[in-house]
Length: 208
Image (tube, rainbow, N blue to C red; front, side, top):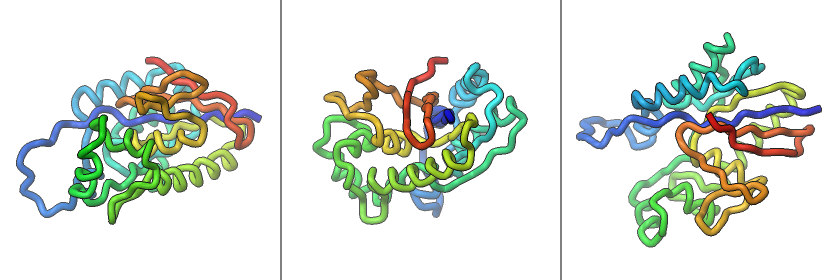
């Protein structure tokens, strides 16, 4: 029995590089990031994709930007949004430690570099392996609960990449590949994963 999982990265977030006169931690700020105007529009357009019609359930990260992306899919399908912390982005933790880790790396994206250094974590953050473990645990529960259904999961760039390590290779450009096709985990993006029970039989990136 085939089960379809639509793995969706949230839309583009607003640029908040100004003065932050706040007592919030970096983690709190990260969780509260909102979509930009473009991010809202892109998410609305993505929600109208034919693949996302008549889905059976929506599960989403608890972060604001993910819920803002999910609301369009929920509205189009007349569904409620279910939340699970295991879909949250991986915790960055100490930003000074993260900056030190990135100081000699070729890319500017820590989540890409963590595809190569899967055990790396800051003292209070999560590694790719940590994130993969909770994402995989959640996915297995979804596949068991919704056999034969079509489910949308809205999450984040790093978390999605680390889950995909279960089936994808990391190429010379530090990008994920499935069956020699490079995946582009942009904001937003839509991936279609087809399972027979818990076995992945196909993975494709759906174009808008």
